[in-house]
Length: 144
Image (cartoon, rainbow, N blue to C red; front, side):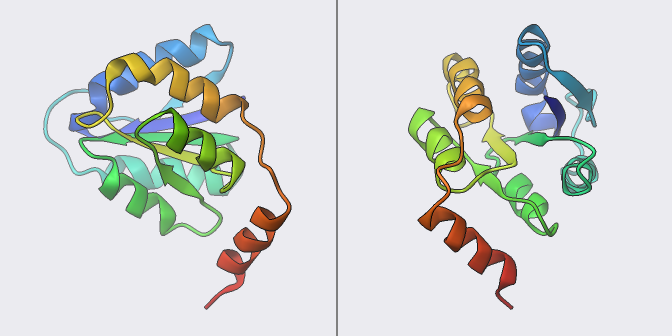
């Protein structure tokens, strides 16, 4: 799978760990930055990830910050993005099963490092249930 990833300074440490996990699992990863832990503005790194996923240049995107909230907001401003903020295994599994999440937002300050690999596995391997959930996603995409 082709995966785009980006973070601000508060998610930089986990971003580096996640890149290594993804590469070990055989995925192609594009790092959109940031490339240091120096303070920066998250939209500068998150918006390009979301745009690349929306244009289907990448299958999925992963974004990180301190809480993951601002990052998810930026991503979800882009049409075609279904970015879910996840904090444990259940929220990650439901993000795929019920929301067909194409972007994952994680808050480094709120998610235990020991959960990262399991959350990634669930998010990458859990299929979308479709059915009633597909109808709901269609309503989101077509509401004004």
